[in-house]
Image (cartoon, rainbow, N blue to C red):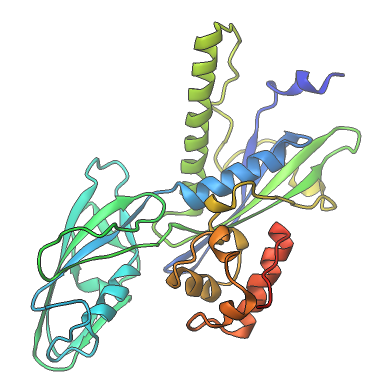
Length: 345
């Protein structure tokens, strides 16, 4: 039988195999999507992973007006942290926004009378935004001084790296690199009878609490569906093609699907293997290295694999707070995932 004849009738099923909250800023979900024809699972897995890591919007602080601050490296009387340290702490605050709200820019405010510890709980916000983890540290006031900060909060996609621009005195731009999806892994397995070429895709998703893995998978699937529907529309319009469109409506069902599950018949002999084609656009998150090593690279403005390949192994060890063990993780990931290595000197 011609394999292509089975392409459209297949309806994909999605099951949630595991879901847990590890802490306030780490949500985990494991999903099975099936059945795919042979070779399709790796295409879908790669597309979903890249969309999850690069296209999901986040709500983050983009600027902060610190009352009394003259410049970023100044100190405020009675406050342990410098203005720079406070900005770095604000940069890490995770927000959860109302996706139905059309407003892209919101305002927040901190007004705290010392002594005491200022946390994300003390940020006054509009009702459509909330803080995910109210224990996130901002500053310590050691005297009865007053700390006042006016915040601009925006919904952003990908990295929010500000170009240098004019701002009023005491206002500091925040280059937020927070991403709602922390990490994504996937693997591909043979499914069912060995005579039938079907595959099962296992997806593991970690988020920062601003949305659940279920929501992240839903948003990425909608984004990809819209992209391909637009391409199909243009192709159909230009060439006047009359094709019966497949029904994508039920392509992904919720975790309460009651049909027969094929997850128990997984053959784990098939390995996940992906190779990026454009390293300039490949985020270092694709390396899947430990968070500490990833953060060190980002703080050194190494955001893509292409930028990382400009370094030698000796240069890598000179990056602040990046130790030998982290460097070993990076080199191993480069070799295994991209077949690349860094020169020693």
